[in-house]
Image 1: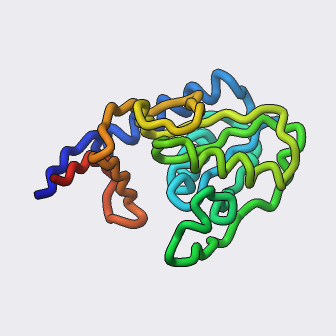
Image 2 (image 1 turned 135 degrees about the horizontal axis):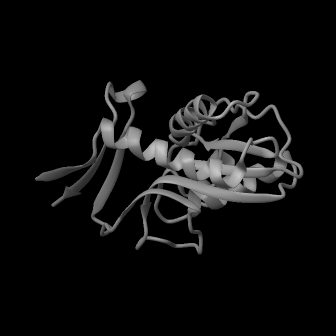
Length: 181
């Protein structure tokens, strides 16, 4: 039997994104030296929304942004039965000397973020790297990675999954905690 519980609805997600944007503005002002990078595939939905909201909140030229594909930087690449098919990566910029904000939807073990940092280094040496995540599963870390900006912290056991549904894929925005027995 599968048991699911809604953690955030569409309105809650909008409020959370607004708050995260305000925190980013406090630390990055006009974003002249800041690049926002979405971690493919699911972090790109959040990064697009963050960028759109920031551009309505601050009067600045378009914020530099891209998306990084971590497919070939994963530490489980050789353990998979099915080959990983990389996505089209939108990274037509250098991060050399820039402040980078990596964006992903859920921080779980930290392995995807480690892979994203490895992939990011192919585009230059950033001045700094920060992490923004919509959901932080704080008791699940395999690596010492912590977010700088957090939408919501969730305490979940290994048998529970956090599922982020985006309007672009699922027809509505919501975040679920799913427990299978």
